[in-house]
Length: 395
Image (tube, rainbow, N blue to C red; front, top):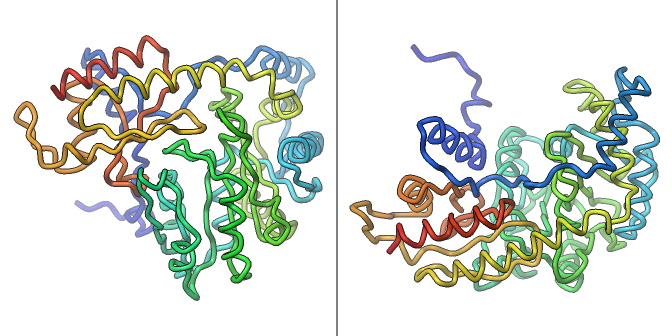
């Protein structure tokens, strides 16, 4: 019997990263020694100074419903952070705190998009962007890139993708899954195109901003001509090792912030009170307090790249941020290894899960079908063992 689920949920794909993580858990439950390099979750503990702030909030009896858009003190702290780190001037009325950056993104899409609107997605992009657009009955339009272009799009590509139905474009720098960072010069060149189309809104997902190795990322909203139609998304999950605390936020034109507050008020209401009190301490802390994590990620990046370059068929670039590498593995397509024919990146990811006991994520889910995503948010020991297994399985 077919269950009477809505067309909305039936049209929605499952998150590829979560599917692979679930598959890895199932295999572990069967007794297999699976190394997980699929999830974008730091393997560090939340810093003690943040945990102390949470404990204080518990002892201070913070236990009531919170304002839908966040505590006033947290919103002011976020304004301070935006000015300090991004040279962005936001008022508290332009800030909305949500249950993770994913909810922030969903809020924005739901209040801006109508059925049939087009959302431009420079590839590769985070898996949930297209799924959330689908929920909004909008159409995702991919703008392709390759490892040869360092996974970046050009102004000419952007202009060619724009139609009268284009309503929103999403940028993510440092990028998940590729780790690349758009420079200020590159963003300003893309902005020259967007300046010609005032009906297009821009969402800038900056969740990985502090995990950068060569240069400080540039915020799109810092371009004066784009400020009034750019929504800046950020959160605490990645840089502060606070994935389970679920704190995300936006800085946006006030009318968009108000609409997001209205939307959120009918879905989740205000974010967890203890996590918000701890978030005040986190966003106001100097970035130097989390530098030890960034330094460790940078060291792991070097290890991963060096080891992957030893495997024939892997094509690797050097990411500038986040904690992923996104190798092109198309050289294996059409080959039969250990009796299994690799037709695409999905086959490749399943092959190394089954034969090497290593979980990764297929690039198909990110709009880059020639690649796989490997997370190095794992220990050096696990990384070395995982890539050793991959090399042995493929040889």
